Length: 540
Ligand code: G16
Image (cartoon, rainbow, N blue to C red; front, side, top):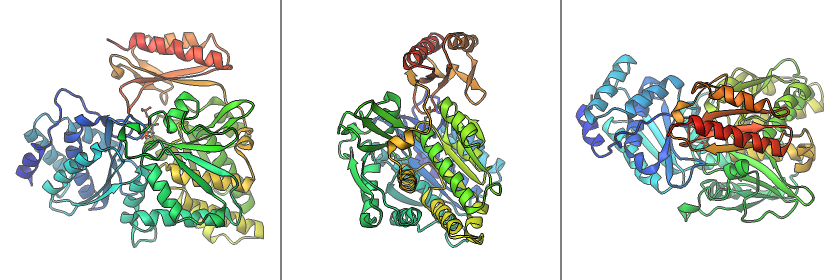
């Protein structure tokens, strides 16, 4: 093997000792200055992963998404564009934590032996990064690992996270019946725009949509997509806002999907005029939140739960119109953060099953695969709708019995192309929402009328040691530290229709507390009380 080459290259990319690195909710994520050695070691692991999977291409995305500009992150994408298989997360963690360069090379060899990987076989890795300047040096570290292991490598440079997932799947399916699309960024735009035209089926989007791009990669990429789009065909009129990627420090600063969701208000700049239709993307364009400011009642947000219910109800209607009711199964996947009212709406009104998984799209994606149509969204706006190969085949081959059936089947087929099948994609999800609103002839206010959210509050709590907090029951309860959950339960009991839980974030050095209750003041009070409990148990 390339032991000497790995050791020599590794010496250029040290890890910062004394830091326990962990493959978290979305890979390794922390202050960018701690990540050089991590990116190198992730390169080694992706080289192994590709060879284990007979030389299929593995993706590596360098992004810290919604985190502040000083952070960065590295995550691995499997051949079909989904997240790294979970068993491999622990190999990644062990490899990154190897204390010396020699032990790193030894562990690399050990993994190859245990997993029966032929290190002389071909391997291929592609990479993308968001607009953070630190991404440039991290890509160099990654490339050095791929050179040391003689792994073929393509750097796609600046991309949104979902574009990297798209490209990974395109490369691995090229020339097969499941070919996902043209292997290029332009191919991504063309696929989405063409599917957008087909999904609308002659209907027109009305009114301007202002898009807050979090001053991240979504800004330039959305502008790029619009160059391939003819608004006279669709009526879509997009105003791209907060797209300053030249000043790195403004990334996610007082704008973007995470700001809007956690603060429950519109970005202060540019100030949305009352009644205008707005949405926000996050720093790597995989989350989406809609909102408007009502002249009478103020800010109103349509988050991931709302996008899930909108998509599920529209697709269920199309199923009925296509005569597919009862033939294919639709399921909705949520996490503990889903508003209780949305879960009730899906189960009782839409009569669809709901599954709750731990946080992280990797968990939701996995659960969604067990349905013909799996609608998965986290409340924070991260999600997509998965169509099984059987479902897509049925849309194409079922003989329509009426023009209405034909219309429904063709709309379903177009949606399966429009909605990113690899991972949550804010740009693709935004086009899906616009299609559904155009079909229904709805404004955001009509969409909001479907059900009333329970008032809720999300709080970030900094603690001495977030790893003390361990969860069970799809993160709805704490198993550790002992006594903490009891105190939370006692507290929740005092409020009407209330629910609250706490968990350690897998992307930030903090815990998160969620609370919902019958009134806004109760939700706020409960969240603050639970946050105080978490702080008390959180160590020095
Ligand atoms: C990532 C994950 C999401 C998760 C979010 C927050 O999002 O991809 O699935 O909901 O982190 O996770 P946590 O609460 O563990 O910090 P993103 O958009 O930051 O990549």
